[in-house]
Image (tube, rainbow, N blue to C red; front, side, top):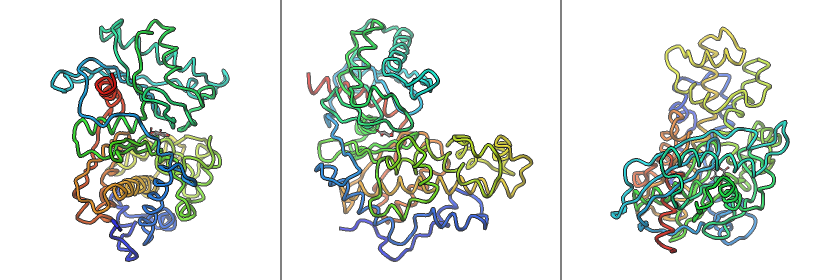
Length: 456
Ligand code: BGC
């Protein structure tokens, strides 16, 4: 059954839609670029959904070819949580978060959870002048931050169960164990590949005198977001991260699956969506041929895409420098108003001085083209998973989403909703895209409480 109403009528036109984000008319020199980057080809959305669903099906049966790992999470789908205090840890893209929360006898979270955010030094995530990064150094740092946090919270020495969100592709071997398949988001700590992140964390906790903290659940950040969403609203079908990385998880029946859809390769549609700039970025990346969807959608890569699109429209030696533009820049540009002073400052920083209004509009439109495609691809993933689970959209569904793009990039949720509305018609009203903050960390603590209740 077809959920999408587009067929070959081609009623959807990218440029009109793009204006939601660009907020100004498209400079004529970008017409070709926009045509290449828009996803409005008449049958493209439906074809994407069909390909995604087919790969989901094969991934679930462990059949190849599928670029979707569809990893089963061992989280109980439950509304029952054991009362007590839990520590949620979230090792994701940019930061490490520690969250302490208590659940009372009425299954409510007592007062606002305490949250601490630590930036992880780059040399702990990837090779540096000091050589390859090691799991011991990484987790010793994490454990030392946990110690400080627990001391500050006055609970150091207490026996607390831990839910550990590890936001990288990890094949689960049990509810609290798994093996890292590969690194993504430019992280690279070689000795942890094929190893268990829980063991590495617990060894570091032991070394620092926190051996009494026991991890009772390991989960992906999308699964944490899903668990928090379900705790808040039983209509929650899926949890997504649209931030440094990209991924979704969903309940398929009673079981949660982490799709690892940042790795989606678009199957035979790849030539229709992958531009030369995408190909170049991929070839020069840490993991060529992998995480293709993530490289078009994620905060980690949007700045790079924009940097590669700026020439021939702008000239500056800084545009040769990797990561000279980051995704936050795109958000600032899109939020800019008046005669676009933030965009002027951005161009200045790149060495493009004395920019006029036309230059600024050009830069903002490039940002809009990059950001719009990201939001549209995210919407297509949501459409595909909805169609897989409930093809006629009989029921209401909540999709909980955490992450900097969805939260901060101007127009991002609106662009996603506009494409969903276009695809689903009136039925889009039954789908809510809901922002959750710190979903993956809070979800980790909640999962720990759910596991305590269900399995002990
Ligand atoms: C990882 C996923 C994660 C996503 C969002 C991706 O790079 O492979 O496991 O869920 O980023 O953080």
